[in-house]
Amino acid sequence: MNVAEAAHLMRAEPPPASIASIDIGGYSIDSRTARAGDLFFALRGEHHDGHEHARSALERGAVAVVVERALPEAPADRQVRVTDSLEALQQLAKNLLAEWGGPIVGVTGSAGKTTTKDLTARVLSAAGTTHKSAGNLNNAYGLPKSVLLMASEGRAPSDYRFAVLEMGMSTPGEIRRLTEIAPPTVGVVTIVAPVHTEFFADGIDGVANAKAELIDGLRTGGTAVLNADDARVLAMRDRRSDVATITYGFAEGADVRATGLETEGLSGSRFHVDTPAGSAAASLPLVGRHNAGNALAAIAAGLALGVKLADAVGALAGAEPSAMRGQVVRLANGVTIIDDSYNSSPKAFEAMVAALAGVAGAGRRIVVAGEMLELGVDSASLHAACGRAVAAAGIDRLAGVRGDARVLADAARDAGMGDRAAFVETPEDATNWLAGDLREGDVVLVKGSRGVATDRVVSQLVERFGKGGVN
Image 1: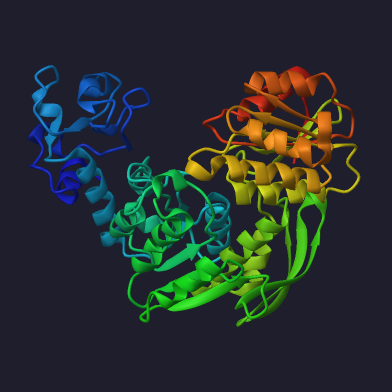
Image 2 (image 1 turned 90 degrees about the vertical axis):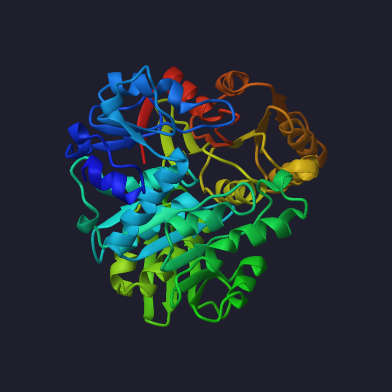
């Protein structure tokens, strides 16, 4: 796609003739990472204005900058004028998808979005080349950037048969806007849980309504893929009469149902899956029962788009965990880390603790728990409940890291862990707390969020002890 074509799709003013025919190599909203050949969008935010960095993007080799006002400090023939830079970015992605016209799978939920997105893309790849969101680029800025990767570095939307896009939110209306940019053919909702509740006056019910915006935004005749094990998610099937519904889960009556689940610790799980298209044995090399549920969602989405069941389960057998979402890291000293440090919420935390408790043959089971963010007035009580869950699961040692993780550690201590539960202020403190008493055979779950930087615990342990392999 060249600059003139992009300007047309984003409803911009015609670009200067000197750059109109230049092919765009990629798209950027951060001048620090802009590359030669990129089209740079000067976005305005609460604390920054990309117009102040447009010249820097050009100096790094951007072919042009998309701006809302003329910039005298930058060459006039390298500027594409629009009314609203963010709207232009979104409009470009929206119209690119409309011209492409292929099936889009939208994935949302309070937990499991990224893993489900990755598993769904893996299933669909059995039937055709599939584009998926990069990392967790799932908001008003990230989703358009993910879409535009279909037209970056020599790629074209026509190269792809399917697109799988993660759709996140922290406030009402966000998913509605994302479905306007990328109207899903299939919409997957994983679970509704206390996440971002500080932004919802009506708590978890508000979260459920915000997640249901994905179903509201489905194309007419599309398919809602809903978790039968979550009552709030299951209730979303009543929102539309003009779309099909496929339910999935462990519950009796689910359309895509797992039975006979056998967890195999760090190696994943095996289960039997029953579907309207038949039955099959499945294996999944991801830790935890909850990931088997994510795999069922991926199978359901695949069936909705014509993937054969045998191909779907075959694709899942080779799955790998998403970065910092259940990755198994083996240290040279015989300690194993389950790196689930990308994000955390009460439901997701308890699911991973249950997975750790089910690891057979571990020397000791240890949890490093970062503070869970954006839980609002219920934060303390939710952290306390998670602390009690750690104690009930028989975990040997626990460190809460920062803020309300102190409540988590205190609750675990009061529930029977005693001085085996501790609180520390920083990830570095957690690393030191761990490193002084790690033993061969220990399995350590590091669960937290990037906001607390619990990922640093993993990197610091790797730096101290070295890797013995990654599974």
